Length: 202
Image (cartoon, rainbow, N blue to C red; front, side, top):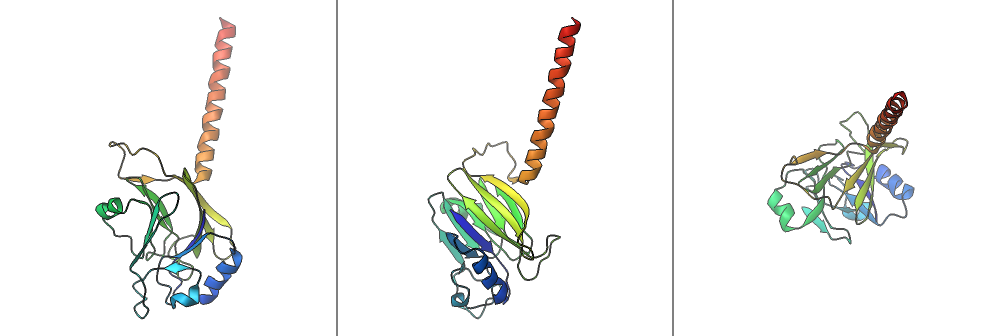
């Protein structure tokens, strides 16, 4: 299941239209609020009310059942653990900060695509594409200017959350994981050579 995720377009309908044209074959289009546009004008995006969307009739939150777990979308990050548990949420999507984020809290993926209009991070204007299956979400953060991948995360949906694990778990970008795996393989090779050398000496 592929999801195009944007937020905080603040009336920039040209940017929204550009993304719809760029990604014509996704399964779900989600906008996390502050579109400052009538919902019909950003179709096929489904959206929620942001703090700047006061003149439009929009839902405060949107619960989206999928074959791989429930997605809950609101504009602001604040939400109670009780509500997430009651709605059996696997993925919580929000905007408002204009800063992209991908973290895991108590087994729930918290995802913010940043802003395509007024960014507040070093990445500039951003959006996300999520590929979701029964095991993980492959989250790609794209720069809006050139549509190139800036960061990539793998969020595992069915990991057991142990009591001793921290409430908030930083998800390292995939490229960092690959680098660590390469370093580990190099160390293991060096250990193998040392053991072999000692064996020959004996």
